[in-house]
Length: 159
Image 1 (spheres, one colour):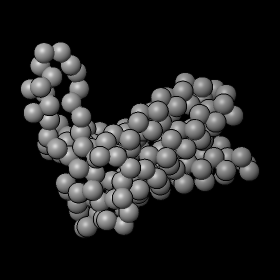
Image 2: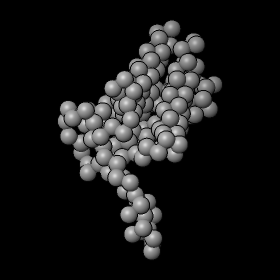
Image 3: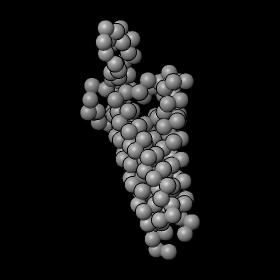
Image 4: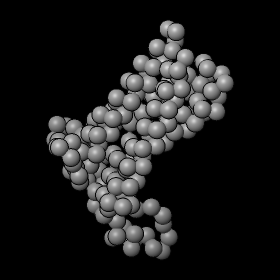
C-alpha cells in the first residue's frame, strides 16, 4: 500500500514547489502576476491544505486517500487554468478579464499605489523557456501531477 504515501507526497510537493517558483519569480525575478496568474495560485494553496490533511489523517487510509485525491483535483484545476492562460498568451483565444494587476490596500495612499502598480497583461508571457511560458509549465506539470496522483490512488484501491 505504498501508493497512498507516494500520492500524498506528490500532492504536497507539487503545489509547494510550483507556488515557491511563482513567488520566487515574482519577488526575486520581478515578474508581477496578472489576474490569471493569481487564479492558478489559489487551487495550489487549497491543495497544500488538503495534502496536509491527508498527512494528518494517514492513520486512516481511506480518509487520507480522499484528501490526497482532493488535493490532486485542486492541482489539476490549477493546471487547467494554466493551460487556458497559456492559450491566451499564445493568442489561441481571448482571456476573461482586463488582465492587469490591481493595487492592494486603500486609504490616502491609494493614488500612489495605483500609479506604482505595474501593468501586467495576461495575454503576454513575461518569460518563457523553449517557447513555453510559466502558465504553460504550470499546466503541464500540474496536469502530470494530478494524473499521477489519480493513478496511484486507483492502484491503491485495486490492491
